[in-house]
Length: 205
Image (cartoon, rainbow, N blue to C red):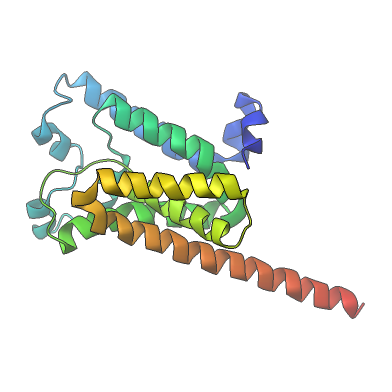
């Protein structure tokens, strides 16, 4: 499940360019934010692309995506970066670069859309939605017993604990979680269909 951790660090960007690019972009943004000297100021977060409802109402829809790459404290930045490094490469390999990029952006923005739909006020930042999307995909793999049962149960408990700790934003995160689960269902079934089709072709040769 974590075989990519044995890949030499210098080769990682070539093997997993999307994960590498995401990590690089959010690192640069975090460093730039730190350089302002006002990393704890929500007004500065908004200037750097954070989600806030009244800006969305003014037509700044791009904040649904930009907020995904903005991290405003060290714990948030390290946790999300580490999670993406551990769990992202398998999905990039499984989906392909294009679909993984699409998946990450969609699930990341869905949480921010959820803030708006469910009227969850405040200034929101971070790739929490994308993380829940990734978890949703892995939960589908666990549902099909395609990953180690103990790892799957650990991820399931992680989801429950995080939703409980973030109960005020739970509905928004559930949007991303369910979307990740659904995306997992689609990708896995497509791969199974392709395998079955190839098997049928082999039988007729």
